[in-house]
Length: 317
Ligand SMILES: [Mn+2]
Image (cartoon, rainbow, N blue to C red; front, side, top):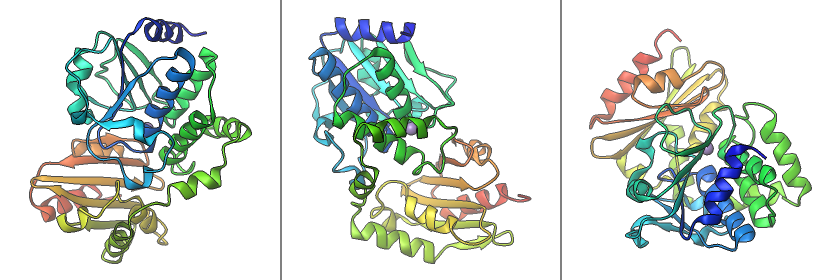
């Protein structure tokens, strides 16, 4: 057993109170690995843990196992410091949000993450920035620790992998596929999980379709750029993955940009690429991410300004 695993187990065993959280506006990997770890703690240590998040959980994740165990942080009494806190899949401190105070107050903080991060918060870091999903790290941890698990754990880990790799499109190596092989052998039904995620509100799909219909194509149609204005943004569920995916299916398109008017003076930029990295472009906008999927949040109240800036950054691609 790895030393990190041993230390983590010691901390779980000695803790009287445990807090679990992940990045704000949790995606499938963030929410599902938090809930999987919750269930592993319940099954193996007969202890309760408190799962909290900031922001919104996408509607598409409404029916994931144990969804009801994750609470909006402001609805939970966090006044007493927790003995142990675990922060999953957070990337950078900017992504933590309202759960930060409870993490800072905790007596011991463990982080489990697959993002590149030079400013780590955890006293114990179970990190691997080459992993395709945090779910892979929790799976490895579970095996290394010899923890018992149930179907909920396996399904949650499978959901984390499926969502974070875009159904393996963004798998960085063979590990997520090998883990999924084990999960399927353990009883996970991938078709059932993919159907479970088909739970978006009608207005979301219709908004995404409209956004795609109004997209512009630049640089010999290699760059597709689409805009979600503030009214349409209210209908979005998550990051507008469908719009990004549809635009990526257009012949000749290599880069896809989605600009989202999230609130006053805040424009979200999602970047996707088929061949060349886009994380450098995201960094130039103050964000970051993976080679083929990155993003940024730009503080500007003029959508056209941001759009022109992004178009300029793609010049010469
Ligand atoms: Mn992730």
